[in-house]
Length: 79
Image (cartoon, rainbow, N blue to C red):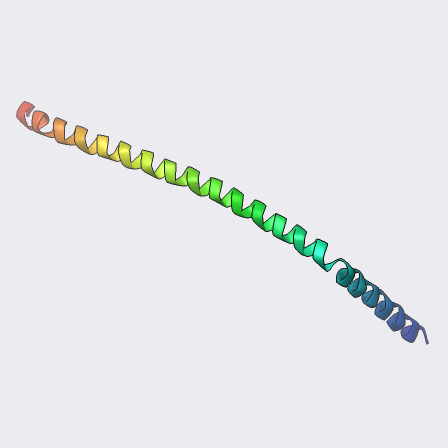
């Protein structure tokens, strides 16, 4: 008998939970959309930062390569 009551209570709770979700489906979906938009905006900001850092590192690499090209002949001449 106790198992039957336990099953009945769990069933009623599950039904109430489903009903609550169904009644509030639109607000829940709106909140999920807001959360997704916030995540997308954060990802865009992060990507922008990564692109800027990549460009800066590429410029620094070009400067290093130019400096090597400048110093190498002088080092060879000095040796």
